[in-house]
Image 1 (cartoon, helix red, strand yellow):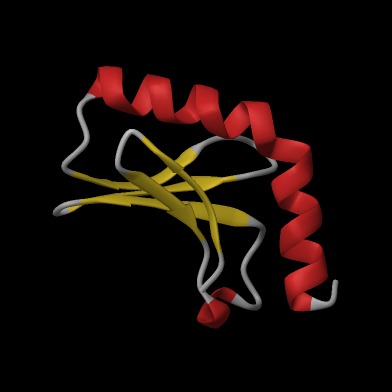
Image 2: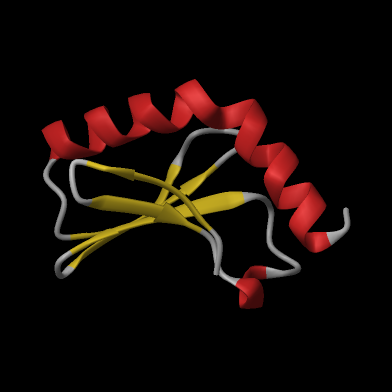
Length: 78
């Protein structure tokens, strides 16, 4: 379970069991969870984050989008 970034208490990561899905990142903090597809930047699932938090998190992801797709591909051998 690589952690890509910790930002304002949010952990940006993906899980080894995510093999077979398109590249995406999970963002967890406390009891909140967000899943964002890296190629389209679309929110796949949200548990607990409000719209403003999602906007800020997606902005952070977009800054690292190409890098994290590369990390995904390396990790899963794509």
